[in-house]
Length: 165
Image 1 (cartoon, rainbow, N blue to C red):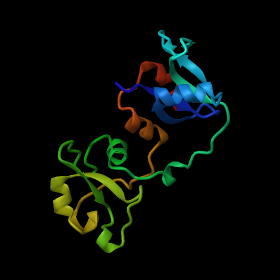
Image 2 (cartoon, rainbow, N blue to C red; image 1 turned 30 degrees about the vertical axis):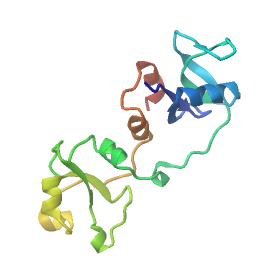
Image 3 (cartoon, rainbow, N blue to C red; image 1 turned 90 degrees about the vertical axis):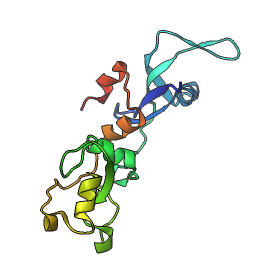
């Protein structure tokens, strides 16, 4: 099983999830420090014992693109919507829908793509939701924790203090 480590910026803001191997390399290169460690240690090829990181913090602040600049992915759109259709609330047969259809000049942006079930998507077609009598909240750029949820659907309890708003 690939183990994941929560990466915090120098300002303690969660920015990413990385593999255990990448986290150990960052710590050994002194680019990060271990904030939370597992009870067991890691053994290097030379026989040295190393910390088993669970949460690391970068030593220097890294400028992260704001969420609007982050690439849209199907998993991130579903996670942002709580895995529910934005029109009827169904949780099965989910697809993506452009609120303003691409055929009418709609773009694939965070503010125009929503989670939609197949029946609602067929009903809406290439029309605007108002034209079909469907309602949805205007989609927004997701919160930073959505990207953490996508990268690590199961969060260890030791991450929780660092992920709270």
